[in-house]
Image (cartoon, rainbow, N blue to C red; front, side, top):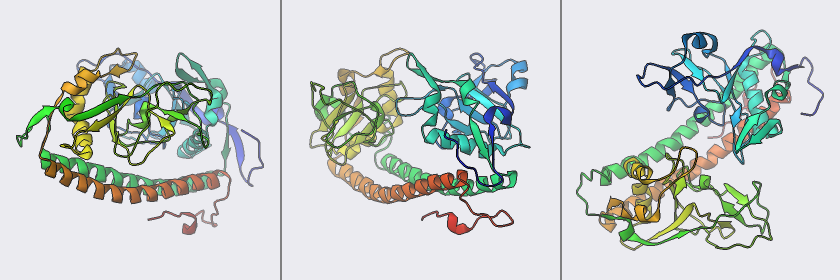
Length: 427
């Protein structure tokens, strides 16, 4: 990080000197009797500094270790191993629980900040900003596909600190902006839940088939399945005219992420040219056991993006609607079948063969019911599109606010309160 002239009253302290304690997490042993303590993993991290407590595992950990390493409110948890091609290691999250016994695993490190020197959440936001800017990629080693943070170098990071009262007000401002983001994200999530509920209301669970629809194999309604071709590429932004090969993460979330790709060099001899087109359903035939079988619908043509061999382009016959097929294949009971029929080892991706995919049975309601459901999905998608545009504005506002905060550009009056005009929330 380059040295710069600090605002009046600010100072720089090394992260190391701001900590009253710092320690690695612990993984313990299997909790077969389900009497262990909660252990946070990097899978519980979000990219915005918050924790997702929906899938926290329990582990058996020695009482002496618990006493020494139990998480406290205000702790910062640092990801020291992990990352990916387009996300460097070094994510941080803020621990805000006051009840229950929580630990974190051995891929993480706990930073306990001296509250007389700095506001813990201010430090978390500062480190979050560093990660968002990609600075932590210069502090990582990569071995056998895993990225490890160079801890000694990381702890020498200079943290720019305004007076404590200003730190508190900066945190309040960022929390207010973050709250607006959370509300918008929750509204979008509820729209997704609305569509899922509508599906169950109209068609019932596809495995138990309570409405007694005719059932048939997936293969009976498939017109064609085309696998792509995997090429080596570089993770960077694609320039005009360049071709790129998609990653499985382009499909994982259930909607198409056109920025999840690797750029192919111009001299690559492309062996197979399959690209996503409007109306296609993409199916992830290889992923982790939990994520194998993810699907998405394509809403535009992408002639410069190639499908890899781990993604299938699936077209259907006229007696099914692609929107119905997307949601029936996304239902948890069907996804569980994909997972059960997949093969692989704990250290590799799991794969579903085309033959097993085609043999899975699903309900096939009359086309008029499928089309009615598709119309509902399209209406919800229109609303969701507008909400996502609003979310993008909120995210831009939050990032802008963070930059102003750490550049000392937020204006506070003598009581250290911010002018509301500096908090543009959007609708």
